[in-house]
Length: 99
Image (cartoon, rainbow, N blue to C red; front, side, top):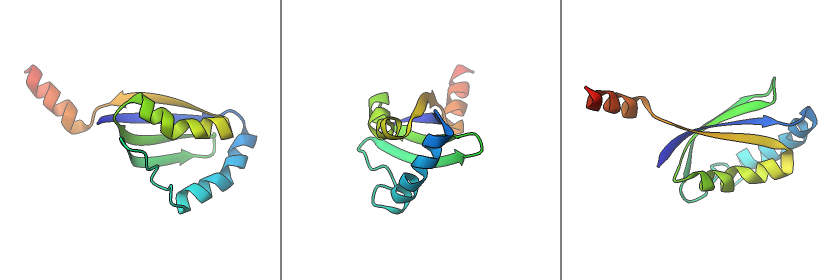
């Protein structure tokens, strides 16, 4: 699976407030680990002071990320950006191969 850095931003502060109850429900409910085949959340980081946040995850494809994050976009006015990344171990191996 590919490692991704996913960032989000609420379109308005009103959407952020509205999403608060859903976040509580989501994090304490049965969906707290975003159980979608081909997806694994590693970290979920919130920066509420500016309505943004970051998810570090692994996914089989960007289409899996769409399945995980699009419901939040539709309901709570969030924009999402998916960026593939490398772990330190992966990057070290690539650097070693180059040498």
